[in-house]
Length: 248
Image (tube, rainbow, N blue to C red; front, side, top):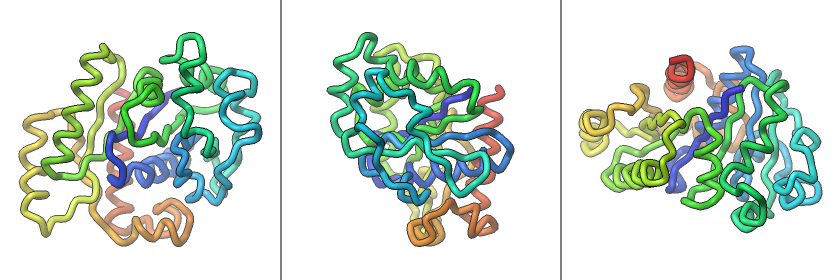
């Protein structure tokens, strides 16, 4: 089982779209795939047409009194399941703080799923918190969608500083450009310059495209209704880079 966190300190950077589309491509490739929607806003749950609610709320789950497999829902797509969001996740930091080994509690909860799933994608809330530290310590890879602007570059620098400062060394860092607009000089400049500063940047950028916004209308991954669109093809290439990185 490989765990992939899709994370950024900032919101509005294409994080949920990346988690949903990469998970869909994982399932299409034959991997038994789970998306855990950890964001209380529940956008990933919405895309999969599943109500963002778990029975009994998050507290019993975090304390290990409810097994995760009791809460998992099937999606409309083969090999692809969802652990829905719940509004109680807004208090997940407090829930985790009440447990033993709070920074590794999510990993502990996911371990029993190793026989059921090949890939688990974590759609993470945009913050630096106890929840995000759990994600960093549980994940094999951390996908970081980054808009090619100076502010987004600074946000990624803050993440790197946090990971280094907290000695989170095991997770593979995999930032990639998101919402790229080739009409903007700043975007093109960052596309060329940022990989020189952060050589771990993946090569495939995700374009700013209306097709990605249409996911909310179709309530489905892009690959299910527009696989040959520029964004659909970009996600397919990004998936290949992710898999190569996990194998390397």
